[in-house]
Image (spheres, one colour):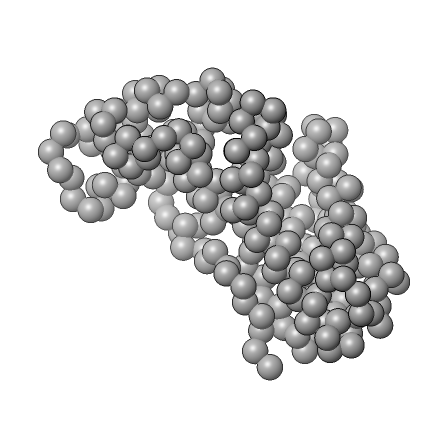
Length: 231
């Protein structure tokens, strides 16, 4: 039986060389494709740094253009609005760190092993510092810029939840889990993980937990989930 694959992000971006802003030429002539791509990456990198340090509201397109160098028109050519640029930052981070979106569920595998795999991917994703910073940014700006939180949720967390929900629905259909609402079941599993070290890390109460602590947390969540939803 083939694995369930629902829109994974791939890992191509993780193999890119990170280009410093100083390496990007500022010629006004039309650059070759490779240079154009490098300039786009430089804009995204500069925007990420600015958003995390100054906040979304405190960051202007002009300041990002000045950091990278060259004409402001070039930045607007790539990103017609600041929200478009923020979306590019989110997409870049999700592609780099979104392990939970790359999990390939095997319907024939042991259900506990599959849940542990998903839990591990989720915790490793959210505990990575760039994703912690992105979550903090979206929560901090949600009151003034609610569209940012929606954009981030649709591009990251919502996709991961959909993958887990589809897997749980398949497991219920196969009799590996008790029949019920797959959405409610998936939310209960994610909620147990989110309420633990993730929430404490987001609030700055702890640093990233150790691998052993993460495994212990996953084991507790899987055990509790299967006592509630096990066939």
